[in-house]
Image 1 (cartoon, one colour):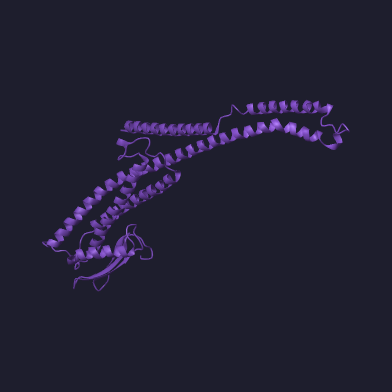
Image 2: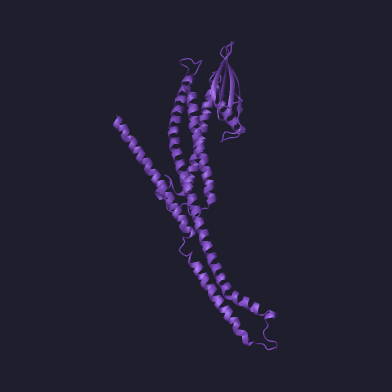
Length: 342
């Protein structure tokens, strides 16, 4: 049973009358034996490496404090089980309070939640980076998993409380106090279960909110990239136009300056054939500008990257809305069928 590390409670009775108890919780393994004839209890507590609240040393200290607080009950065989119940209830409260703190912090950062909705403004999540939302989603996801674990351990501790106390005598004041304490713990666990269900719903809501905020941040980043790309494209157009203006003239000037095309044999600085340079360079420059303008005009009516992102987001939202409407219609149809069957 130690090797399996499964939670639970078990008893083993020998022929000599010795009863051995095994109890495994999220914090520790507890094994003890009780001899009814001598009311002697011998046991061992093996703390786990961690229970998400304390490390091994911290777990051992909390168990030691609880044992010393209720040391007058040591002669009863259920003493260590009672200690485990008390420690389990304390662990549930600590995990619940930690998850509650994380969710309140997430609601404050996102601006969406029962603690922030009455004073919420649209600036609640502005100015935050995607990395902040990613970190927030990890914390909220951890809280959701921790709350699910709380629900499981509420059932485990409640089952331990439901096991009858053995070797008890009527009229014993200590037994009456223990029974009252167990009833109180059971009621507190029932109330904590209701609180946990509500907190789980808040955790699911915050996960959805954080997911939507991450999508919005990524969409905003895509728009910024598209705007920067558009500016870069305008700069490249200017460079392209300047190149088109000067490139033909430079090309023909270089071509006509080679020795094989030197049309006069004197040392005069000018040439009567200089008009040939303009006859070729000017028409070519104008032709290139016209072709460039025609080619660029073909792509002016195409949507920008930001417009494409907006269209994709709109289509996605419409699809989600349609799916939600279909689910609502199915639920209404199901209710009508149930009412007809009745």
